[in-house]
Image 1 (tube, protein in one colour):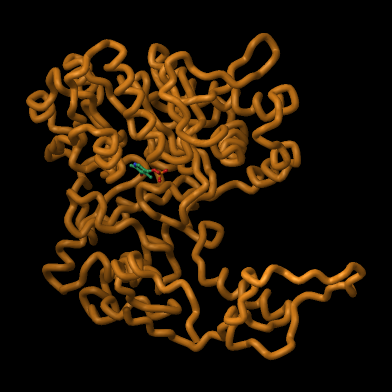
Image 2 (image 1 turned 45 degrees about the horizontal axis):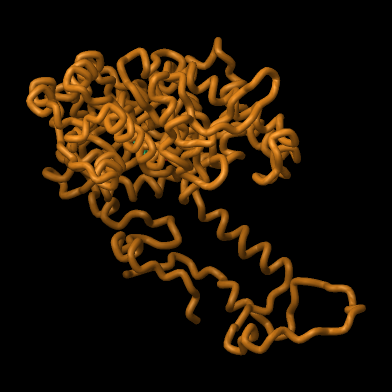
Length: 484
Ligand SMILES: *Cc1c(COP(=O)(O)O)cnc(C)c1O
């Protein structure tokens, strides 16, 4: 791994000065006890620094971190929208932060009411009335969903089904989930318009089909034009349709997955419903199902008896998928977010997200090749860097790195796998026209640089503390400790 520091940064260990201290403790008024010897380590060299040294160290580090509070974060498929600060005000309330999962239902009626109402709202938004808030992420919702489908077939004594159909544009978690559940993954191709190829699907769907995992709009940012026919083919074969709801932001408040023929759906609440995410969580992957599948949901879920809220385990539940009741504070944020729009205005989220994506696509598609630029996109779209690679030897990775020099977070790259040299852009609804224009201007400028001075792109980023890393080694063998 080559790491080139652009400018030397003070490292906290090197600021260490013998005897310097960051804490001022009052003099001890109890007998001093000695810790057991096996807990004491002489070789543990901690830096000796003052309070201000520590504050400056961490503040410096925090400024190296790009975040959506600084600017557009167009990471396709991840819905990095701005997270309104009112959400954070709500989660700070002690009634939410101080509850304990072992408290009795009578003591936490308010928290239970919030969860119950969130279940109801998500069921209504998705057109799928059975809801569990337990899963901690989209991927965990997928696993719960496939286990529900398994339980459904088993309850009907339909045990020979073993294959899950997954489109070639799917997110990696879809085939991963299916194979983790012990099923065989069968890929269905997309057609020239980016939809599931219906003829291929008809050939694949049979009495061994467990179901289909479908993302709509799909990862190309395209609405599945034949969604009803797709669902019908799977239902006719006796399978169920699992909807990967990661892209719900494109249709929230406008179309309901349940009405389109989807039987089970997860929603990444941290994407569509504005819970800060990245870096591994905490997230929330609520799962919504058709009424007749509600008995299989993982629990406990919240039920209402008269005026009282209580935890209940669905009758034929697949069991728990997480300890306790899901990531509660992520649920509070999603609840506040939905309520702050209200039923009347929720559709504006999807409409603005779609307008923003189409605006960016229109500004870029003459200069960047847009494989599906003949279609209206939903909340995101894909470009391909292939012409740049062929003409100037500049790859999508170089373009993404150069974007950092312009002060933006790069889009998702090399996904979906079906588009070579893919650049996948999702601006989200929270960006203004000005911010979209600044981002488009940078990308157009970079296209110009690719023609006139490709070396600039190969050398990028030039403004970051480290330049090109060995991506694989950085992930597999990260250097996390300072070795002076
Ligand atoms: C984000 C995403 C997932 C996985 O969701 P997590 O919450 O990160 O586990 C699955 N499918 C698609 C299409 C996604 O964009």
